Length: 506
Image (cartoon, rainbow, N blue to C red; front, side, top):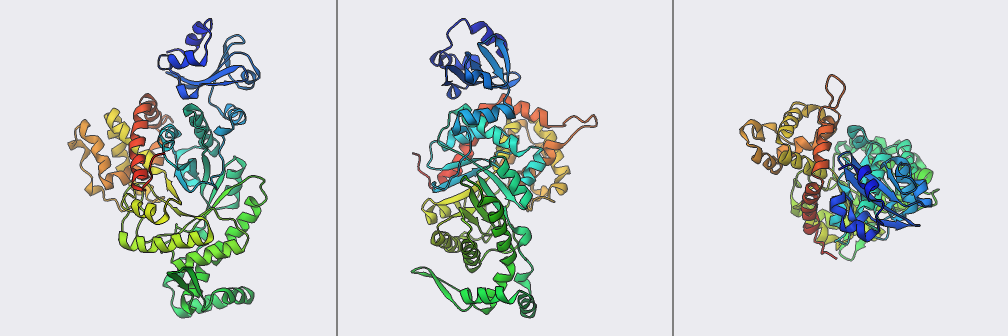
């Protein structure tokens, strides 16, 4: 279908919204994207070259979008570029991200490819959860070759495409420096997840008492006196049934482990968040550590931040067990529940949401999270959307998938520099023994899932000797051709997450 020819030939007909909706499938129009604004009709349409914004009839709206007129003063075909995305957000405010402070359940739905948000929206609109559609870390940007502008623009166009007007968030995820936080905020992001892992002393947990005392004595006397007066040998009743206690041993270890992270967080907040004239959802992440966060440590960190003037929207502790990429929780679910109850009680005491990171596919603990919190939490997912996209490739383009599968196994060690996994390639069936119809079953194999999961950046960035992408363009051709199939996969898979969390549909 040639979009210019179609609308050029049709322009002698009055192209009302009702008329366009009736012919949406035939014309390649996304029916929920049809809007009338200031005398013009706007909608998203697609042809063999991709998606476009179409603006019909001359008006102030018609003039402000960049594009090519295919009928003078009547039909403009506009690219989904940065300038037009900025214009879209000004004209249709619901396509701009917003804070989620008033929402009890928030779900981070990281879209590494810029194609998952339509599926996320079609699912989430039926549930009482606020979606954070644009969610990317600097690591993910580097591995995918995308920018914060591209991530946010993809979310905005998806929201317009689906006619979703209930709000969405944009998270600068796992940011570690002043420069990264400033960049995300400057791009209009409404949530900052501050990764404090580089300011947490992981050696303290295994240090002997003499080493602890020496390090503790090295702190300034003012800091020691101030913190001792607040915590040392004191007990804190979090609930009528739950009490925390700081003794000489755990108090000093907690202070030494987290004090630098607390000071760093307060500095980031005062420098970048507090001066803004718009609401920002601010999350502190202490989950990227080697040892689990004790309830006492959680309480200490939270209280010091709040006493330091930081308004926390959510906090992510390091829970017991392992939250590896792309597979279910590894660990004792009973122990997780016991500790999660304590962590949630602390978050409720200070009135912020508990945040669960690496939440993709953690099916065995979702019922616990939903039950304990009674529907007040933040959950981050991301990589599972990539896995569903690759499952689609296995189904629809088996020869391409076979190439990628072999490539991933060959480059697994490179990917392990970025992610910790326990996958054993020896546990993955030899792909040469599988029929094309059996390829999707590889995504039921935890080891295979993890290998494909963490090699996404290498797959997307791989190039041939001539400098052309080895896989990327062919992958997007498949995903664009089977867009609706991908939507259905996401609705089924992410829907399983929401159902196990105990969410009832609206």
